[in-house]
Image (cartoon, rainbow, N blue to C red; front, side, top):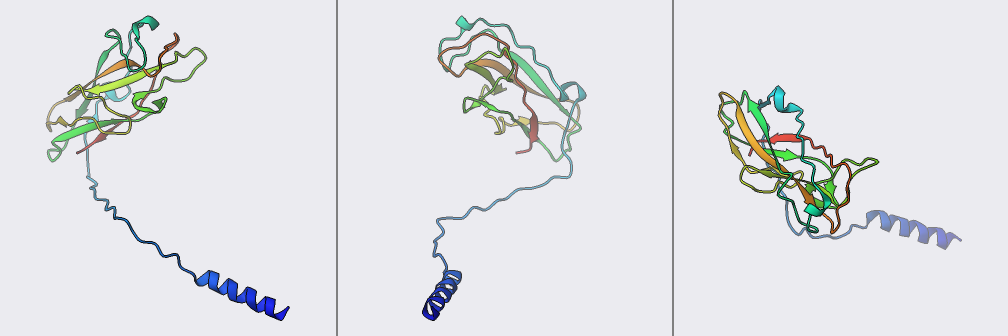
Length: 176
């Protein structure tokens, strides 16, 4: 019995002092900057409604298609930008449609369309993935800075069903 207690004590002590040998495979250094002031979003575009067109299900031609009809241009306006800030980008947040981070999922409801979401492109025509900054827009410190975007329906499945096609996203100004 005494030998068992000693063996357990030695085993417990060795477990407490054992170190796992690991080798680092690399390093990640985070660098950034916090600025005192940024641009203001104008009141008229802070909470924006973009009315999308009504589109028939047969306007979609399988996953990855987007009908020519239904694209809508919208703008975000920035003002009171400090002179030290010469560029900005926009990051859109939200839930992605079926895991495709380039397509915003439709707001779930009792009569929501399926197989489709909304995709946003910036002024350069580049698709803006969710949670990623858009292309950079040049800014001026005086007047209103207009940042243009395009929203369009985008099929994420082979079949699109009819229903409500509403979506919502928050946006954040990013200073590159």
